[in-house]
Every structure is written in C-alpha cells, then in structure tokens.
Image 1 (tube, rainbow, N blue to C red):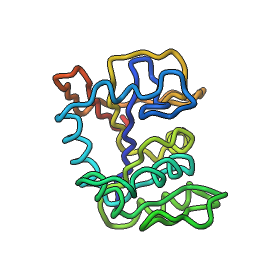
Image 2: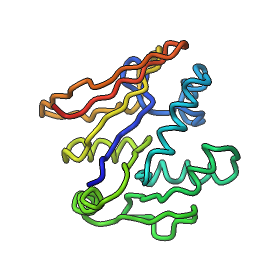
Image 3: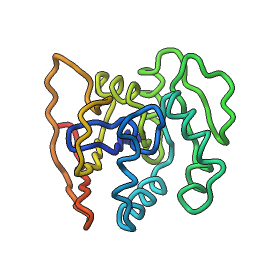
Image 4: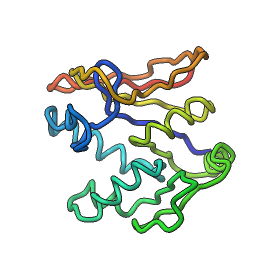
Length: 186
C-alpha cells in the first residue's frame, strides 16, 4: 500500500500560495529568500524517495513549464518520475511520464494508494490538497514553515466544519530558521 504525503512550503500565517515567483501575487517568491543547502538537500531527498508525483492541473502547468528546461539532480528526478495530474480539463499532457486522472478522483487515488509501491508526493496544488484532506486521503503532512507572514493567499487547510486531529511525528529546524513539521492523522 502506498503512502500519500502532502509536502508544502507554507508561511508562518499558513499561506501556501505563490512560493516561487508567480507574477500575479504581491509577495511572491518568499521561499527564495530562505534558500539554503540544507533545505535543498531535504527537498531532493524527498523527491528521490517518492515513487509518484500527484498534482493538480494548475501546478502541473507551472511545473511542466519550468522543470523540463532545468538541469541538475532535482530537475532530473522531477522530469523522470511518474506524474499524475488530477484534472477534468487536461487531456493531452506534454510533460514526460505524465498521466491524467479525471472523473471520480477519490476512487482513483484510493486505487493508486492500494497498489504496492513507494510513496505518492503532492506538492503545491492547493485545490487538490483541500480535496484530499476533506476526503481523508492524506497519510502524512509535511509543512515546511518559513518565518515570514504575508497576510493573504491560499492556505494549506480548507475552510471546514470538521475537526481533524494530527500527531506530530518529527520536527526539524534548519539554520535559516525554516522548520519542517511532519504530521500523521491521529
């Protein structure tokens, strides 16, 4: 059985939107201010350990527009690894090794999780993450918390009337004061 891991860059005030330079956001690029060798090593190890990248259509468009032209170990892994895009509108993905999951995504993801194999990693994809959390499909949540607040933007957790308990299983702080907190459902 596969483990579904949501791994997000997040500000101290819970915003996950615009971490990397999206021109439509006022405070975009907040991750870049905290780049460090430790952070890069952590993210590289994370994608190397993952068997599948699961993303939403908007994140797919961003990643597919960026990663194929980049070089280095991280780019090589992103380009080579199997990718699944959850979308009812994307029909012909152009990024290498990409499949589209449309229709009943909950059943489709549950089927993928039930297969033997390595972890499924979700990055970005706020709409998808909200749906995964709402459907109780997340096995592990890794929040890379950056010591900055930006006040507005899409947040990791959806507005909900449900209460969900999480258990902190690991916490790691890098010298640049970025902290990775790993949670599993309690």
